[in-house]
Image (cartoon, rainbow, N blue to C red; front, side, top):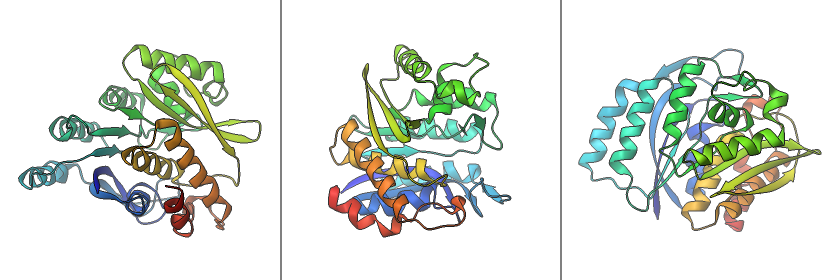
Amino acid sequence: MKKCAVINDMSGFGKCSLTAAIPIMSAMEIEVHPLLTAVLSNQTAYESFKSLSLTDTMRPFIEEWKKLGAKFDGILTGFVTDKTQLEIISDFIDTFKGENTLVVADPVMADNGALYDGYDMNMCDVIREFCFKADVITPNTTELAILANKDNPNVLDEKWVNDYSNIEESLNSLYKNGIAKIVVTGYKENGAISNIIFDDGKISKVTNEKVGGYYSGTGDVFASVLTGSLLNGKSLVDSCKCAGKFITDTIKVTDVSDGNDGIAFEKTLKELISYE
């Protein structure tokens, strides 16, 4: 089986990050090796949460992996708590990325025109530089705007960041600076949700029916399915189709009163296996 290091947090409630990546990628026959950045009582969108950063444990754990002679076909990165963690992960990629290792970075920092709790523009600058380590990045529309328009005052204007012409301009700007493969998630148009794919200068869209409202962890679910599909040999477009279909199908069978609880992917893992 293909082996993927997944560098992310573990949240007790919210079905995001590693609690999403491990079962989903395992169902896709990808061997998951988690490296934790933090442990949270529940994901950060709930009214309150407790968090323990694991920055101090990351390097010692990585040293043990080196002793094991670890090799990876893929590396997927997500939520980080501080700049030091990004430095550690950058070194991790330098150490473990082989000639054919796929690196996917989800630049978790903002959504809906607002930065996440604990993030500021200085942290976003570090995340921007880190993205150049990746083969594929998966920002949402707000994160894309921040990555491509460092000094533009509109980067946290929700209407501006969701304007398609601005998205195209942002994609081309990042491409000129060296990021060749980008998947922009959660673009809303005409009652549907699209993922905009930028692949070496070519732009395309994969559109899915918009169902339900807000749900925690859909970005993590998307990145997990996308990475698993890419590791299993699918193209970037087909991987996006697979991820979008899985999320849409899962939301349809999700019945929760609080969207922070996440989507019921446990019910649809069999379907994911079937169209993998």
